[in-house]
Amino acid sequence: MGHTLRREPIYLLMIAIYPGSFDPITLGHLDIITRSSKLYEQVVVVVSRNPSKNPLFSVEKRMAQIKEATQPLSNVAVDSFDGLTVSYAREKQANVLLRGLRVLSDFEKELQMAHTNKTLSDDIETVFLATSTEYGFLSSSLVKEIAKFGGPIDHLVPKHIAADIEKCYGKASFQQ
Ligand code: ADP
Image (cartoon, rainbow, N blue to C red):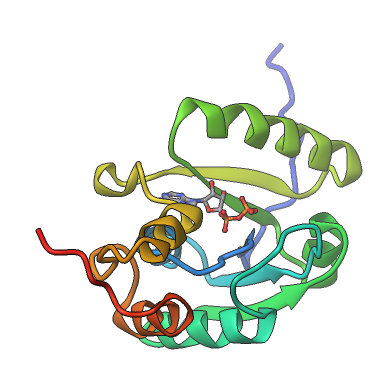
């Protein structure tokens, strides 16, 4: 006698949310967004309003920066959220929560967060995309650190964001 497969619901519309601080969005984030836009019907990049960090850019400014950077991607939207990510996902009927993985230290905290979110909402799956090799070192805080000391950041963030950062810290003075 063969065993019976339990039929799980099939998601016809896969909506993925990509939450983060994005202070500011980097080419590493954009790489994850571009690749995930080919995997899901809709990707919503959501900027966390979590006030525990001291951000360089306001949430509204970060959203505008992301909108401009993702403009060519027709199935990518930008939003912000306050509170629990899983509550936001449920409200938007998103089935996937996207996170990017760079190094082993990311893995530990990301896995803990994924497990925590699973206890809060069983029907939302965390999906990890591995960084592209050229962006494995890249983070928003690294970009800010370089800019603070006058180093070049044009190869790390989109041009309009490099200009925004230079308005905060002054133009790059570093000579190679
Ligand atoms: P958070 O403060 O929530 O970690 P971030 O804006 O720093 O927000 O990052 C959002 C997500 O993007 C996280 O899952 C992070 O691991 C991932 N990420 C950040 N930089 C990169 C990168 N260079 N390549 C791949 N994923 C990245």
